[in-house]
Amino acid sequence: MDVNFRLLPINGEIVIVEDEPLLRELTREILSEVGAECVAFSTADDALIHMLTSDTRCALIIADHGLPGQVQGAELAELARGRWPETPVIITSGWTDTFIGLPPAAHFLAKPWSLEELVMAVANLLQPGVPPTETSVDTPRQ
Image (cartoon, rainbow, N blue to C red; front, side, top):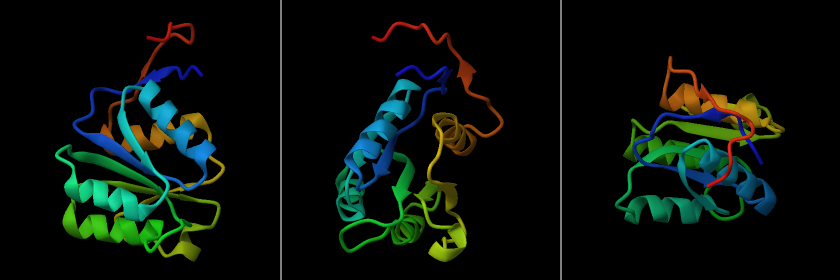
């Protein structure tokens, strides 16, 4: 898969929480391809444990709202905001943002999203005012 954008270096990793395996892997692959270090989890419970025990800074959380386990996406956003207020959160769902009741600092990305919408949402949060640099679609994979 070729994405024709690159992000500037990101300080930390992007934590992806998505219970659908194919979408979780696609999200991780897309963001890795544009230059982000990513870790991916199927539950917010596992992601929260990772964030609490990891030495790596969490630069961004992208979480589906409807997840198995004890913690839903919007709840993860609220917990993260309390512990790491500077960490941006994107909640993604097929439901509407008003139905979910997003916390004030969370951003919403409606499913189904396009590759470009995902990359632009990440770029806008992590590098506001700096558009992703375009790369050739024919760039060989490393």
